Image (tube, helix red, strand yellow):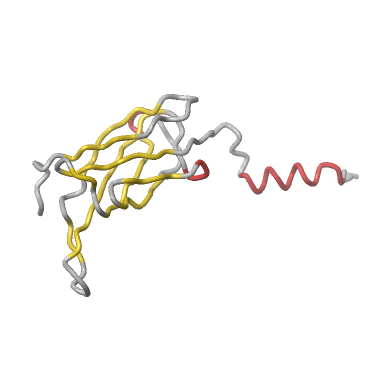
Length: 131
């Protein structure tokens, strides 16, 4: 008959709660986003592992405020190839809503394996036209 050893219960619970994902180490990421040489007032940044280059895992995203963003370690990036997407909006005034400042900007980026990444700087040229 199979006996449960109560000493193993905490270990089993930890495995279940963490999803057995011991090999994935993530790092916090911070950075700045500029459009036409100025800090981007509002937007969203998404970092997605590039599966076409052998990288898998979870995507990360953050709000951009006054040109800056920050993603904590818990939701951060691992090493390898990523696709980065930046979306932005500009205010149309009180109660008037907002509109896209430029079409979604995308770029490729390679994060170093096993190291805390330096702050990321993204410069979006004005040549990325409004829709």
